Image (cartoon, rainbow, N blue to C red):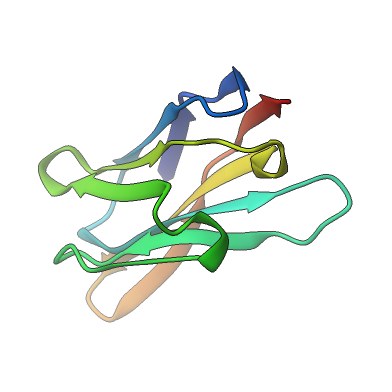
Length: 120
């Protein structure tokens, strides 16, 4: 069984910052790509940022230059530093991890979500 536990969400004023964390625990061999998604009310879930095991990252155009994704492979943890937050960044942020659970078997796991609310 695998658990992804997110933390760091909250209420912040426009222009502020938050640092989201997601720790992965449980039974698996290793973690491939990790990422952060978000879902605003009435909208579909969208990719915010992703990072490979080797540290290559990519971002949604809407957050480039403001958000930074990073990971600590030793701690099985991924982070999302969010700066210059805007009201349109308000959403539930979900952590995702692609896990190798046994030789040749990979699964996608999700966290429960953490709410980020940006006030104007």
